[in-house]
Length: 110
Length: 118
Image (tube, rainbow over all chains, first blue to last red; front, top):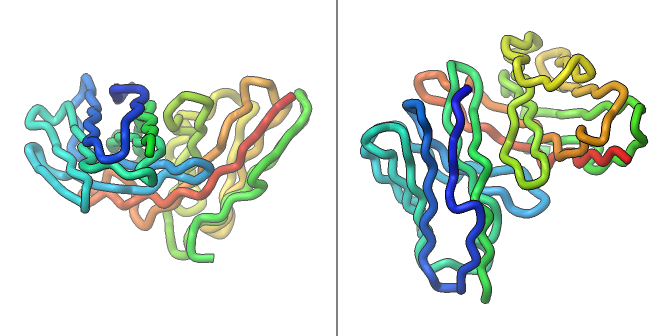
């Protein structure tokens, strides 16, 4: 089945640093989604991308839909302690379900 | 409540016992999903409901796993004869429209049910 490969698996950064993570696939996706999971919570949608080449921002978060439609990037600028969590990329498979990457675990040291 | 509600939040059981996990989706959401999150792993798709029917149950790991949805609302995931490898967080999500439609509906997740099989 379609798989999403996320990197890095984990990141340890200092507060104030910028963060970049990416997601790749061997298959084309028509939509890319980025979710964040806080400890003990369910994932929450951060950004949705619907068009190849699209660059979308949500506050300090910026995500891009790769022009090949096989990758996506998420950047976080000026990280703060509450950015801690697991970030997942996701894409639709068929017409009815989302497939998720294994996540990037972010730790921010104050 | 306004969000997806799951119960129990934590369940510890002995190997071989049956468990039931419940999901109460957001009112009006027609699509309901079950995912499993094992330690260090991503979210593994288990089953999807549209209304009361399950068009895609391809992710259920074995015949020990089953799920049903009644009244287009509450769903129950049942695991029979639990094994230690079933230990994981089971996440339920609901959506107003099926993911993958022209404009994919956002999935709203519950907090999950953490299952530990001893």
